[in-house]
Length: 241
Image (cartoon, rainbow, N blue to C red):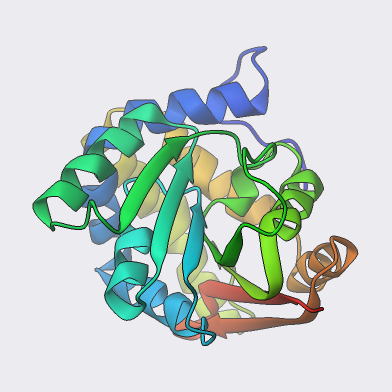
């Protein structure tokens, strides 16, 4: 993947991503709902439903404001750790779980997904919503996910994608090229953040490359599914004994 960064300065990608999410944290959930017409709720539910091994412990990487972690708490009995590099996103997540009385099931940790602060085989399942394309080193991040996953565990990844069918690809291009930047600039007051969203989706590797990266990291039985006319991809991989 090309080294796409949000801002035109000399800071590395990881620092820029941290700054970007700190900047847009207050309006992140509002914009997500507007831009996806609330379909992001369905995408998270589908991702969590892929976890079918009744996990005791789940790690939600790139947890952001905790929406995927909260969805996992709804459909599993697991104890969930949400990890992110943006303190301001996590601060919002903490308020959410307090309101929803989920503080006994969900905790948050400010940390780097490419250097996970956990022992080998710590979690039964890993979820990652819209985070993989933000990694500075995607292969390193996937290797770390594999390391902390228990045997017979599963990783489930959600990423935006570009539809294959021509008509949907055309509509997707219009929406992403015009409406998303306008919404992002007006509501978040950070025009670069949502231009980065567009650029990073365009530059994201094909599903075959992502599947190969998962396999190279050690995952088996890797699979890719497109949903919602191809605008979202779900990737899964398993750690077998």
